[in-house]
Amino acid sequence: MQELSQTFGTASRQPMIFVVGNSRSGTTMMGRILARHPEIFTFHELHFFEEMFAAKEQAKSLASQEAARLFARLIDMQRVGYLQQRDPNQFLAEAEGCISQAGAASLTAPAVFEAFLKYETALNDGRIACDQTPRNVYYLPEILRIYPQARIINMVRDPRDVLLSQKRRWQRRFLSGNKTPLRESLRTWVNYHPITISRLWNAAIRAAEREQPHPRIFHLRFEDVVAEPEGTVRSLCDFLELQYSQSMLEVPQIGSSTTADRPEVRGINRDRAGSWQKGGLSLAEIALCQSITKVYMERNGYKPQPVRLPVVDLVTNSASFPLKLGLAFLLNLNRMRSITETIKRRLA
Image (cartoon, rainbow, N blue to C red; front, side, top):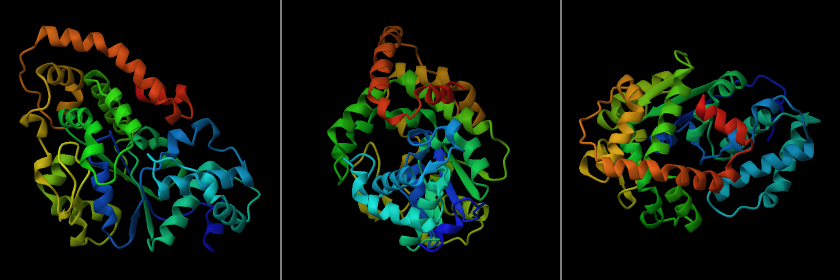
């Protein structure tokens, strides 16, 4: 813990990586690729921004006990898991020791977050922390400003494949070795609607585009990773100023919404691109998605395909949208520190 005192109240230059993008765009896969590098430790989704951070409070000083509770919450999120029942108090003594060792009377939440990343990365014999929480795409201005040493990888994927993955995401409970809680399966089922998912895809693209061009942001299409894994990852390593390692491509094939996990199989699964063309989406879902995302699809190299418009299905989907949106809002309330700020960032 001797390095923690150099983090609080200083402009730390410890390297940090943030993998962002729309959910189901390959952020987890990219996190696993980076985790195979000997210098990088990839965290689980931490959800610090949006759930533990409010932009208007970023410069607010925290009392030592408040900072320790935040530190403990982050430890709990990483070691127990975001989807599990958690009790941050079990890590409070460890967190208090870290905060006490830092030697600061008051701290800011972003400084506590950085110190946690540094601490946990060192515990896992890493040098570079990698946070792969997708929704951080909505907080790029804050990340770039607060952490001048941070590099950002923005993942983009065909919105129709994102739609299919989100539609089937509730099935992860039955496809993974570590069972997803039933409440999470219910939440992901309620979250799905072709209009909602398509609009959120647009919002994530817009959020990243607003920061372009930027020398610390690397935009990467999921399809390019699976088509040319080695060349793409080599380019990524150049951006991160790291030496390429062939082991980075030896990732376990897990996390799919359509097939069972196969952790014993290593390598980039080339079949993951263009899955929507093999079935799983109705004509109405495809038509709605392409209509809503058309401008950003074409801007990112995805071509809409002619689809016969099924009027009855389109009307049914449109009619169900308000109900599904309302239910999704209620089931996600506990994931937002500031409801107003969360909504504004997705509508901006």
